[in-house]
Length: 294
Image (cartoon, rainbow, N blue to C red):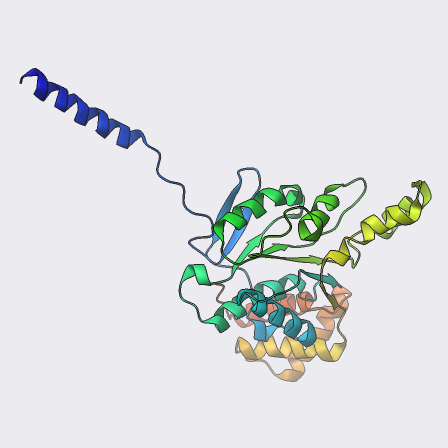
């Protein structure tokens, strides 16, 4: 082997080693699924291929809230103006279930096959709200229309992350990306506990302005949807809808009597209590509950 052949061989070896050592390209964000979880510590979006949710038609007793949120989401998915939404009120009445169910229903209604044309859902945990600017930067670059969802959003004590959330929802220099909408659930309409608001009134130099700064966070949501504890008729309707959907063979009188006893032991009537009761009934009947998460 002469010098030229030897040099050519070394060149090929070097190129092969360089190719092997080159890291594989990072997967593009918002691909591989319609739902994702934002991991703030690593700055990545984890695809969720099977979402824990119920079909929209199973959510009873919240018809008005369902219709309003569905229409708002449908408009956003079609590229039309839409509002950030705050779903507030009684525990267990389907606030987070409605967000997840509406997301799936809108994608079904759109009938789009290409991933880029489908609406994405990204969950951000309450403790990671301070990392929201980083998430929005990723979503702005990705371009896919996305619902950012935070469950059980509230602020306590000296928590100052609400200020960045206010700016990102509406008032910042960059503003919310056109391809992003923010949905949040909370047990509080004002997102702040009453004692925190009263403390501001008693200690601030200008109490009215201090309270207004905190309470006005809710005003950044253009759509407010209130959820209230259900009465017995709605409670029965929810349970009977579940029983019919899952084909549970049980007499209506027995189903209702058990529902009353179950709600008394829990001290509440709600969609969550109804679902827990149906799981108990299905277990006793030996019937699996396949909700077909997507």
